[in-house]
Amino acid sequence: MNDNQPRDFIRQIIDEDIASGKHGGRVVTRFPPEPNGYLHVGHAKSICLNFGVAAEYAGRTFLRFDDTNPGKESEEYVRAIKDDVRWLGFDWEDRLSHASDYFDQLYDAAETLIVKDKAYVDSLTAEQIRAYRGTLTEAGKDSPYRNRSLEENLDLFRRMRAGEFADGEHVLRAKIDMASPNINLRDPTLYRIRHVPHQHTGDKWCIYPMYDFAHGLSDAFEGITHSLCTLEFEDHRPLYDWFLDQLDPPHRPRQYEFSRLNLAFALTSKRKLNLLVSEGIVSGWDDPRLATLAGMRRRGYPPAAIRDFCRRIGVTKKENMIEMALLENCIRENLDVAAERRMVVVHPLKVTLTNFDAGKTEMLAAQNHPNRPELGSRQIPFSREIFIERDDFMEDAPKKYFRLKPGGEVRLRFAYIIQCKEVVRNANGEVIELLCTLDPDTRSGSASSERKVKGTIHWVSATHAVPAEVRLYDRLFTVADPGSVAEVMPVLNPSSLAVAQAKLEPSLGTVVAGTPWQFERLGYFCADSVDHSGNKPVFNRIVTLRDGWAKIEKQALQ
Ligand code: ATP
Ligand code: MG
Image (cartoon, rainbow, N blue to C red):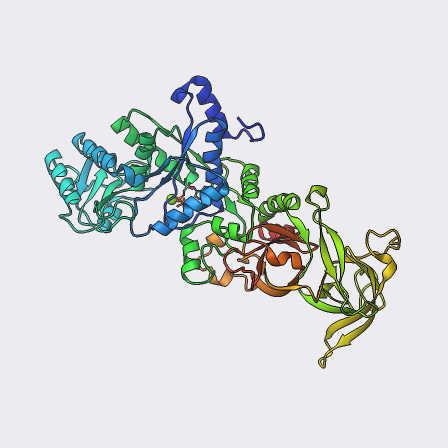
């Protein structure tokens, strides 16, 4: 057991089950994604819960593909889901399974239900079935086919399997109660005909089981003890239990529901994410602006920070909306410790140091991390021409502006104090260069560098800088709950991506994708795993240094 882990209601139930000897003290869970899209941050919550509790109780977890819906599912998604689960830090070892692994057993279970007069072949159309189902306030009514004989049902079902009928001609339904107040119990469909090849079973089958039927029984076949799912399945639990009651498998799992993760300003619906991808609104499932695991990985979010986030939001039955600020704070806390510091100028303004020799390069020592001396330091070149951030110069600066202004002084980090002597403009009157002088007695770290000024800014040597594309991400949506709007186009943030031509300190010219860096005073960044190369460096902003959400979310979530 992990003492850092809050004792949420699921863990309390497991504690009790272990104490009472239920399931022989075993804990077996599963994460059951449907391979019809990439995983998102909501799935991370479910993965952390399922793999997390099993690990805490020395149990086991299956990664089970819920692949009962061929046509929408694909091998690409299967691969991506496996990559993402592994990346998040979890290992299913040899427990990779598919609902389709059990198609034979499920078929046998369906025949058993027919034999027990608990299932029948219905030949109503899909539309008629819907009409017969009734509503929340009105009971449904029995299909005229509900009382077919056992022999006729078996014969039709076998012929469904043999491929004698077209899609939609018949379905197999459970025989429960068309008047049940729970619509899920009004003779739910168990099997439907789909003449579609399946990405895992090829064309072995032309009938496919429905999720509810396949899911609980797969849990039973695998010896799952605690089947953890989101609240929308609460009303399906009576059906889950009904199948187990009728078929009485040797092992009986139990289903528990918890609330979904809803993250402000993020989409957590595969269907809607799919739309953004297929319409080309984002660059792919791994677009760094998406709250997909692939997107967050490419953006540079450390998996440990996402696990930390899932731990902090906890597991309850209450529906809620989690603020993006919380996720980003987990990212920041992780990166503050993990990321080495580097100097990068994202919006460069040239500065010429008129009293520093042209052609001379001085190497200056720069600490890699302010609180981790074991990470050592590096040498950075300093020369007559440097770049500073455009924002770090202001012509008509207010009194409290402690960066560079005409006549003013500022310290260049790890280097010298400089003074702005002259502003150079182009024909349009825009500032294109500053002429400054450097005080040679103020070199950082030297005995004579006593003199203090209020501001310190970052810089890179113009002669040595490596040009790079830097991608600055902002929220993709202008509304807190983009999942609830009918049309996403009108709520897209037009400035969710800004591209800057930046100047890197030379040590960043050779880095590999994924490693996070703090660009001093700017935020955390990493080289992009798709577009970055040594010839054309491309960096993503993972997160800014300070929280920018507090205000936005306060307004939006009121
Ligand atoms: P989507 O709405 O994105 O399609 P889904 O529930 O259909 O999600 P599945 O692939 O069926 O996606 O989900 C696999 C598991 O992840 C399920 O057990 C589901 O309950 C869980 N899950 C999905 N979305 C969330 C979420 N937002 N928060 C927590 N768990 C989730
Ligand atoms: Mg689902």
